[in-house]
Image 1 (cartoon, helix red, strand yellow):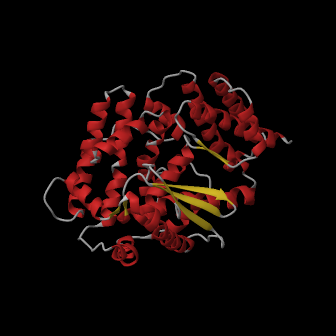
Image 2 (cartoon, rainbow, N blue to C red):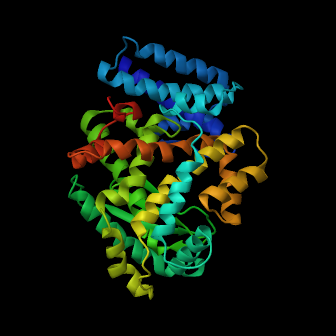
Image 3 (cartoon, rainbow, N blue to C red):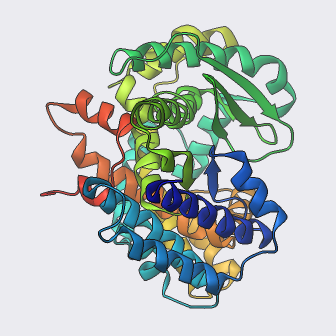
Length: 407
C-alpha cells in the first residue's frame, strides 16, 4: 500500500469510527460510506475507539497532510473534512464549544442569531403568495397545504407514479445542464409512518431510491420541490456524477467517505434548496404541476404562487437555525416550540417533531447547512455562467469558502 493509500485508509477508518459513536448515541448515522467493505467490517468488529483517541487520530491525519503524499490542490479540501471529524470527536469526548464555534469548525461557515425582521419579511411575501382568504398567514398556509395534499392512506397507490413522472422531467432538464448517463434507475418507496418528506439515496450502479415519508399527507404542490432536491439536480445527481467524475475519473477515493457534519454538505443542501429553481425557473414548476399532476387529482388553480411560497420555505430554515441556538443554550422546550410555531409557522405536531430533531447532536449542527448553504449559493449562482457553476457543484469538491464573495 502506498503512503497515499495508507492516508486514505486511515481517513476512512476515522470517519467510520466517529460515525459509530454518533449512531450509538442515538443521533443517527452521519456518514455516507461507499468505500471498501473490509474497512467498514473492521470497524464493526472492533471495540469502539474512545473519542479522545479519535481526536488524536484526526490530528495525526492533519499532520500527515502537511508535505504528505497528497497533491497540494487536494490538501485544503481534505483538511476541512478532517477538521470537522476532529471537532465532532472532541465534542464526543466532552469538550464543550458554543454551538456557533462548533459549527464554524465543522461546516466552514459563520453562524449566529438571525434577526426576526428577516422572517417578518418572509411572512409578508407568503401573505402575497397565498390565495386570498381570511385567517392568519399560518392558517392560510395550512389550508393551502391541505388543498394540495394526498392523505397518507392514498400515498402508496397514487404517489409513486407521480414521483416517477417528476423524476423523468427533472432528469431531462438537468441533462440539459450537465450530461447524465443512460440507464439510470430511480425507484420510489413510501416509508410507512415516517414523518420526513423525502430522502434520496444513490446506491451505485446507476440505481437510486427516493424515499417518501408515509406518516403524514404529501403536498403535491411540493412534488417538484422535493424530487428536484433529493434527486436531480440535487442529492442523487450530485452523488452519481461525483462518483463518476471524481472516484472513477480521478481516483479520489475519499469521495466514497462522505462525513455529513462537514463543509461539503453545506453546499449539498444549498444546492438542494436551489434545485427546483435551477431546472424550473420562474413559474415553470407550477405550470408543469398544473398540467401533469394537479389537474389529474382534481386540484384546480387557486391563484397561489408556488415558487414564491417555496422561496419563503427556504428562508424559514433560518428559524430552525435560531431554534437550534436556543436549544443549545438550554432554553425550555416550550420556549423553543413557541419560537418555531411563531416564526416557522409550524403546527403543534410539526414543532414536536422539530424538537426531537434539534435534541440530536448531529441534527442540531446539520440544520445550519440548509439556511447558510442556500444563502451562500444565492449570490454564487446569480452569475451569467450559472449553468457552468451548477456543473461545478455537481462534479467538483468545493468548500463554502470557495464560493464566498471575493474568493
